[in-house]
Length: 336
Image (tube, rainbow, N blue to C red; front, top):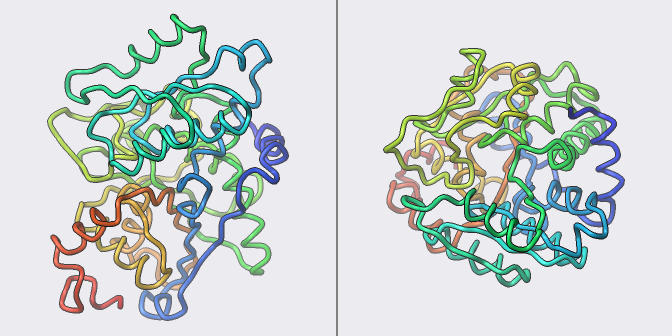
């Protein structure tokens, strides 16, 4: 199981490897919202997302024999880059299985970090089977995207940083909202916050039609998503909560929110306007949830995790312009 001791050990392993990402805020935005919004900018982490934390800790835990055989992973992009970069830094070869329609920046960066990239058709292919086949052929160790306790301990170091940064600000948070896909990031942060800031209520954020964690938390058991839907939030789209992550989140998470594509894009605009950061759609889901449910937070302090910023700039501009958010007349103009 995952516990706080594992997260504290992971923090030692990551010292000097990963960045302590900032906790950002805008006084003007806070004034207009009527509550204090603090943004944990993991989009400014090495490789552009939080994923290098868990990947590095996981690969560092392997034996010399396991490292010599290399690692394999499957991902739409952020985990891919995290594994590729961590493996290269630790002198380990990596093979990454990625959908052929993954954002170009993620495909390109993964290869540039030194990984061998194998693409597949997202509709007809089975990425897990491809990864298992590579592992069987080469002896490589599979580094899963979320359902691994060692990996979760690395992601949990974000919670340690948030707790320390809140203490430096001489404040506490009433709530922390985090994007969730398979649940590894959420499980790690929730475990750290339960130890260091137990007064903070923890919430998940997911796109509509992919809110399996929200619905699973309400039902008390894992429930999958219905097929036939798409989302721009590619980095947090999963079929069902993880077998290992869900019991942790069920115990520690207060609830979940689902957000529309328009909510997400409005949040991306707000983050650019007020924090001067570029967030990918999935990375902006928590901010989208906080803004959508603003009345819930009046007079409170809320931390929102921006989990990644790996998006092609032209694509990012296209999202904003397509939804009429690129000009003062757009729906987010009241937050400018």
